[in-house]
Image 1: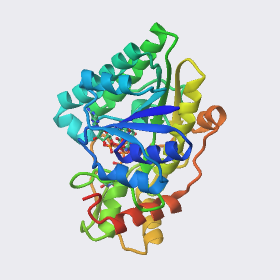
Image 2 (image 1 turned 180 degrees about the vertical axis):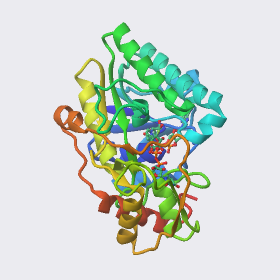
Image 3 (image 1 turned 45 degrees about the vertical axis):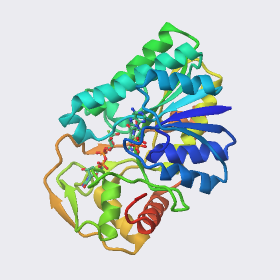
Length: 337
Ligand code: NAD
Ligand code: UFG
């Protein structure tokens, strides 16, 4: 079976390519390298000892995308490509609506034309909004999204559900990721953010390795055990393996199905700092700062549906997540550069 991954050169995509190749799938990657380095796929080949095909194109380029489907027999698509920085999306909303929604619509049009109607989509826990209490489950109503990035995820979910209603041949799996962190155990691929990281784990890693002076902890007055924000961190290799299960599920189901991919366990910012210091032996100096606008106190999943229906559950704990994040960061000071 041949799987097309859009955005397959990025952080989650590259780890998923490894797991797909290891599971025996043929893999094709479409990526415009807006937020990734082609070096990632060279390393995917090194890890797996297998080859994959890559196209340097933008998914909004309909003609180019059509050609990919015409040159290959594609059985299913995993759609990672998109822009993902919450803060940037507030400043540049049209970039997000164009790239994320425009990109998804173009991809779906080409898939429909070419008769490929199996899709796995990268959604986010952000679609639950701020009113649903954790643990979050797939039955809960969607919440209000507070930024354009989140709005694109909620809108694409809606588009995919409507598409499945309009045409029963479609099989779509919506994966709502919690907080992916860590890296492949080889230390060859990992998260390589542009500029100063926005997310906690890459920030902690860069402080630990001496690239940044200290971590700002955004608020210690939340209603959580130590007052700092709680999230459901998930090892990116576990997340990647969830996609392999989702692709297999999509192969013999119809309609749209939603799954959380999380561990079900929340960790606070200070717990993450302590776990990282333990795994790395490095110090992570931090200072308590005001809350970050838009942040919630506590967000974690109920992962039971993925376990019961997909037969998937997270295997790695916080120690492995921190160990592998450190291994990647300390061996690749400047990411892929
Ligand atoms: P990433 O930025 O590392 O990967 C996205 C990839 O898509 C990049 O390689 C980028 O170059 C490519 N891309 C972007 N626009 C494109 C376009 N128009 N045409 C072709 N390629 C394009 O991000 P990631 O962390 O690997 O996330 C993958 C997906 O998962 C994204 O859709 C993201 O919104 C979603 N997601 C990520 C997280 C997270 O915390 N990392 C959480 C929830 C959901
Ligand atoms: N945090 C800090 N200091 C930092 C960065 C983060 O204290 O420098 C705290 C945040 O306040 C939060 C926690 O660490 O309590 C996690 O923050 P992240 O930015 O790593 O992750 P978020 O949960 O805020 O956001 C992530 C993705 C979004 C996605 C959201 C919900 O980055 O794309 O999960 O799925 F929308």
